[in-house]
Amino acid sequence: MSEPEDTKPKLNLIISHLGTQVTVKVKANMQFKKIFEAAEKRFGKDPGTLRFVYDGERLTPTETPAERSMEDGDVIDAHLQQARKT
Image 1 (cartoon, helix red, strand yellow):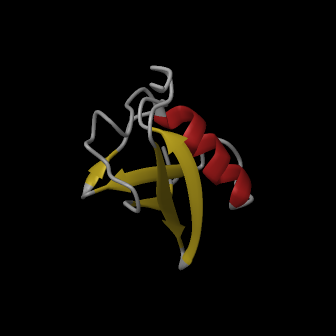
Image 2 (cartoon, rainbow, N blue to C red; image 1 turned 45 degrees about the horizontal axis):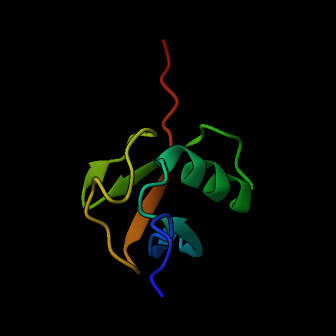
């Protein structure tokens, strides 16, 4: 029996913020927007307050783990967005 085509492998991505880590299970083609929202909720942060960096580069909400060639167990760093004073 072959598996249905929509059964994409899931990745366990680790999101690290101030020494705390959470693991999120995601599909490789899921947009980061959903992943960011889940992480912010788990860290008790308001939506949009964290910025996410992988391999030294900031991730955008419309990208996917597949576009960044992420693998199971990869770590995304979450940083508080710096408030800019005008």
